[in-house]
Amino acid sequence: ISPGELEVNFYGEGPEKLNLQNIVKSLHLDKIININDYVTDVDLVFKEADLTVFTSSYEGFGLTIIEAMANKTPVISYNINYGPRDIISHGEDGYLVSYGDIENLSKKIYQILFEDINILNNFSNNAFQKVNENFTHKFARNEWKKIIEN
Image 1 (tube, helix red, strand yellow):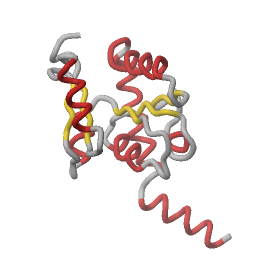
Image 2 (spheres, rainbow, N blue to C red):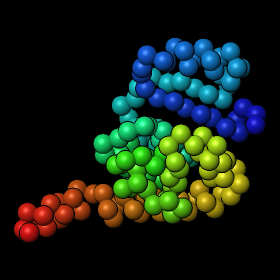
Image 3 (tube, helix red, strand yellow):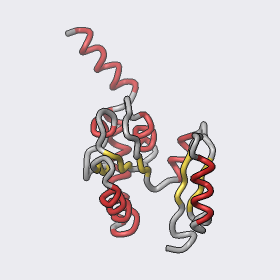
Image 4 (cartoon, one colour):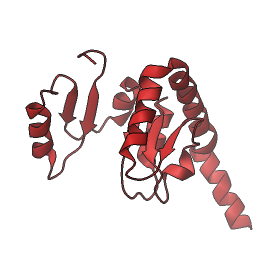
């Protein structure tokens, strides 16, 4: 893979940021991998992305996943408790892989980005459709109404 074919972006702050930047530089991957600051306009980031990889070890509700999918960016995530498995339909709008299974995670990334462009296009459209049907304010309001009435 040469520069221009693949660009990997990480966003956020944390105690390991400088260490990650040094690793990327020492491996001469700084033309491909970018360690970015925290951003406030996540829609812009997701609109420019082909894929989001979500590797959290725990999650409450996966707002990041919904934000990605709302911008037609499919998500590959670890299948952790809560969040991802409640949002992503494996093989339809993204992939869920066992926590810590880096080999399978890598295979899914490669499959979506390089093996079959139709998978990326289908997942993108399915993700967008799912969010617009199941994760809007109107949908949430109707679900709360059902709970309260019952």
